[in-house]
Image (cartoon, rainbow over all chains, first blue to last red; front, side, top):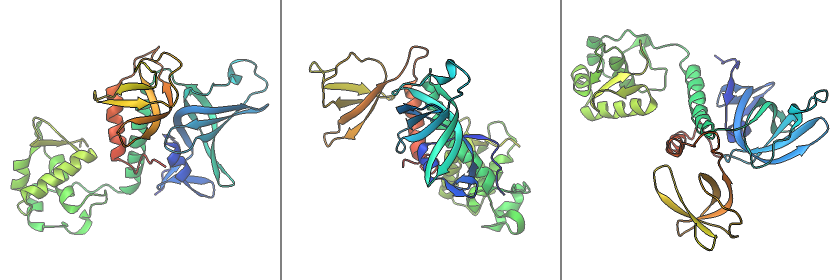
Length: 232
Length: 83
């Protein structure tokens, strides 16, 4: 299942340089990309009659070539060169020519609020994580776990219950129990232990810590109670 | 900023301080939020190669939030590679 990229994906220059190209498409770790945004500082600007060539540096790799075509009919606004030393947000298409990657920008905007930079780096992690997750879990794990059914089975519950979302059997069991818990303050560790007789408390705690750091669950009233982030 | 202009102290989003050394003394007044690119020395200072001052004319920069974001991206090198 490919995600056809209709999206504009925030990236680091290092990700763009590492992207693999198959025919006309680029992929960053299986996620298809075409239109991207990067944010960095202009190190160099060169004006030519039909285009401006910038070198944009986001510190993750060497500065990237960004070409902005100049509309020769329009005077004024469009043709102002952004000076080196300015932080900018670039939106454009990824291109590769003779194995050298560059961007063709359709928008270059100097940053007015540097907090956008913080947002951008968080969005990069978020976007790539979500796009990748969508690719990996091509089919949702059926929510057919009842609390009685899990406790006897030990590892995998049989048949169609293989976790496809990168979690181990233990982590999936813990997650599903937490997901199906209707109580507002969530599932407590004690409850989990009662439901999962075959798992030791330390295994449960490890699973909970992992799920929490991956963002599948969050703690509620205290560190012993958890709810799932996927509202069912 | 040290009187010689070759040293200044920065504090980060968590209030921790670090000393930045310059090869040439400062030729301008600086204040506010700076981004310093440099190498870490064995005395745990930073040898500055370049610096840029963040614009804060329109809105103040949230340094603590930035600090948190940096910690997060280091936890996910697969989504934020450093070439």
